[in-house]
Length: 231
Image (cartoon, rainbow, N blue to C red; front, side, top):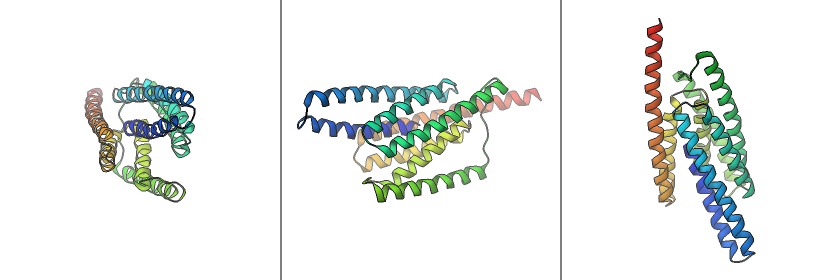
């Protein structure tokens, strides 16, 4: 989620640079206008994404609405820039988003709050294996059919970002653990690509994920304490 919003931001910066170069060779006013519109949408999408992350940390149902609008905006931006692979990825995020809203809403109707749910170690390993295999297949597709710079790493990060989003929908604390590691790898990748500003932003997202981890641990302890008192 957090990694995705800045990952999208970085991809759009590259696209904007191409637009700026085109300004000097084509219709200047048209490109400047298009660049302004796309930049405004991109900034709006980033803001909505960050709000969505904050609401997720607070276990607020509104997080799914903000996340959905962010996915829609990014799908439109990527489609406009002909980044069709990223567009398809946003559609998968939308599907998980709908599932997350349904699961949280159903749980809130039953428990009157968003309860943290445990996940078995075996399930963690199986789902991570599925994500790794899915990332491998996606990476091979990027390698053979696109000019992606780091197809395998990029695809694995995308796959595990989807898994982390799924774990968020299931209300597993493991989602924040996974986001911490995914964001750390993003930091390393962008440092390798000499994208120091973006690496710094991802480092901030590592801190946000760590805070979300801590916050949900506190909620889990409180919920367990209430459960024991009711017994």
